[in-house]
Length: 298
Image (cartoon, rainbow, N blue to C red; front, side, top):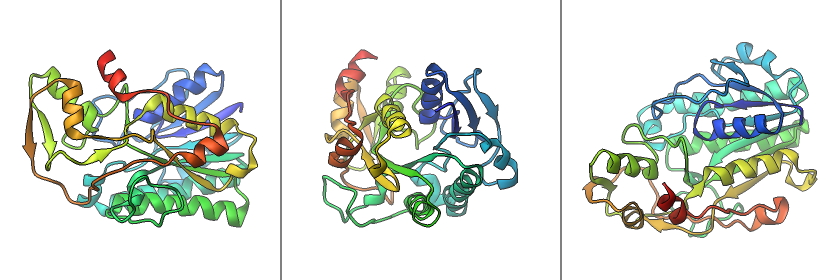
């Protein structure tokens, strides 16, 4: 891998992938339109070739794919609740934008596209642990549009022979996690509330359980997919999670803060828990960072 392109490369997960690629002496092009309202700042690596452009503008992004070996596609309307408020924008960015990325990669002869999707595809009907063979149960415009991206990746592999890999992330946390607004990641929001002397805001009854995955483990999965010579991963989708989950009260206890309750939100599931058998088997990946140990280290 000599040259990579990262969409959403100034955001939370994407910027960590960019930094890792730069450390590996890979030439990196970054595409990000700075549209996320969950970030106080964006994380542009000065050693990358950076472009503030929108993936929905095909004619603008097309030439940026020239001579690229690997594409990491993370640009998205990436929060559940905002997609309920503005479904048109979610579908435009996550479906049309993904198709633009795949088509530009295909035209440029890119070797592999790695697509970042979401565990919200499993919805409420799939009992934990969730595995990749389960039927989708999309509850929001966000999950519908992100799984549309998965289908596009599979179609580009089946129809055009484009090498694609899709990842379903389970509640990613870590350095640079969004902390702004009511739709920030819960761990980032709780940490910020504690630093401001405010109680943690628990949505609903607090008994919902989530599989929390550290961003370093997510980056490692992406790099493994980019460098793997295992042809069995082509056209496939993989869970990226720990296989362990916590309820919201567990987080409050770890962070050691008071709490208050706020109303439940529509479109959110009761429990997520990743079955990681497939990714362990085909990519040799498993999570390394423990949530409680990370929180204690902060």
